[in-house]
Amino acid sequence: MRSYFSLILLIILSVSCNQSVKNEELTFEANRASDSTQKASCVYLTSDESDMPVLSWCETDRATNSKSFYMSVLDKRNNQFSDRIKIPIEQNVNLHEEGMPKLAFKSDGTIIAIYEIQLKSEINKFASGIRYIVSKNKGISWTEPAFLHSDTSHDNSHSFAAATRLADGEIGVAWLDQSFNPLAGGRPVMFAKTDRNNIFHNEQVVDSIACECCRIALSSKGERVAIAFRDIINESVRDIAISCSNDTGKTFTPAVSFSNDNWAIEGCPHNGPSLALSGNATYAAWFTGSLNPGVYYGELNEKQEIIHKELLSSKGRFVQICLLNDGSRVLVYNELNQGKGKLKLTKIQKRKSFVTDLNLKESSVSYPVITSFNDNKLAIAWTSEEKVYYSVVDASKIK
Image 1 (cartoon, one colour):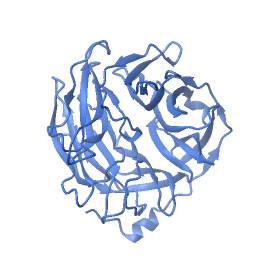
Image 2: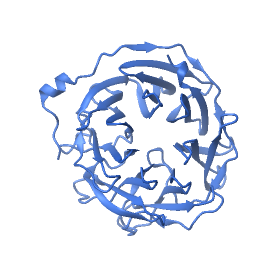
Image 3: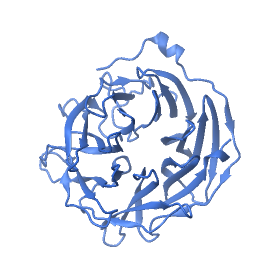
C-alpha cells in the first residue's frame, strides 16, 4: 500500500485560497442530440483525427428494451452535431455512466469503439468483459466484436475502461481487471495499446489494487501517458492516485496517491477522476466525500506531487477537465441544489478561477462531459431527464 505525504507537507499544500471570480449566468443554446422518445444515457465526448469533437451516447427503447449506440462529429459550418451514425453493439452491453461505451480515433482515422458486456457466470454475479469493434471507413462498417483483454473467462470481471490516442497514433486503454484477491476487495488497473492491425497488446498491471467501480482517467501528451484512479489505501481510504509512463505506454511508474483527502469509506463511490496533460504539468479534477466534500482541482509537478489543490464546489459531484490552446483549464461539473443538478463551468488561468453558471431550461443536469477545439471553443454535453443535450461555448466569454 502507498502511504500519504507527511503531515508537514499536507499543511504546506493545504487547500489554496486563490482569487475566484463569480460571473453572471451564461445563457446558451442547449441542443438535444438523442431521440426524445427513447431513454438516453452514457454521453461521451472525444476528438477525431482532425481534433474535431465527436459526441457519442446510448439509447434504450422504452418498449422493447433494445439498446443502441450512436456517434456524431461536430459540423464546423454550424457548430452542431448532426447526421448521427449508429454503431452496432451487443445487446448484453452494460450501460452505466462510470463505464459507458467510448470511442477513440487513431491518427489515421480508424475508429475503435469500446464497450462493456455482461457475462453469464454461476460463480460471479459481476462477471463482465470489455469488447471492441473497429471501423476504417468513418463508421459505415465495423468488424466483429473481440475481447480487448487476454483473459476471456466468463467468470471474471473486466470493466470501467478509458481510452486515449497516443503519440504514435495508436490507442491506449486502461481498465479495472479481475481482483487478485476477491476476499480482500479492490481490483487491479490494467493497460494495453493497439498495434497496426488494431489488436491490443502489451497488456500490463499498472496498479494491483484500486477501487472496484469508479471510472479511470487516461490522458496522453507526447510520450507521456497518465492514468488516474481511485485508490484503496490502508484498506478503507479511497483517494485519487496516478501512475505515469514516459515511453508511450510501454512501462509505468509505481502509483502515487496525491489527493490527500483521507476519505475512508467501506464501498465504492462510483465517481472517478479526470486528467489533462500539458508539457510537464499534470492537471486533475475529482470528487471526494471526506470531511471537506465536493469537487476539487489539483496541479501536480514532474514527480506527481500535488503542488496546488483547490475546492471548486462543496456541492459539486461529477467533474471533467480539458485544456485550451493557451494553457487555461476548463472544468465542467454538476452542482446539487435541493436534489437537482445545475451545470457549472470553471475556467482557470494561471492561479485565477472564473466560475460561471450555465443557464439551462432543463430541470436537472447530470454526468456532464467536455472537450475543447480550435482556439477557444468548448463542446459540452450532459444528460437531463433521460435525454442527451449538448452546446458549443466560446470560452473567451468566461472572463
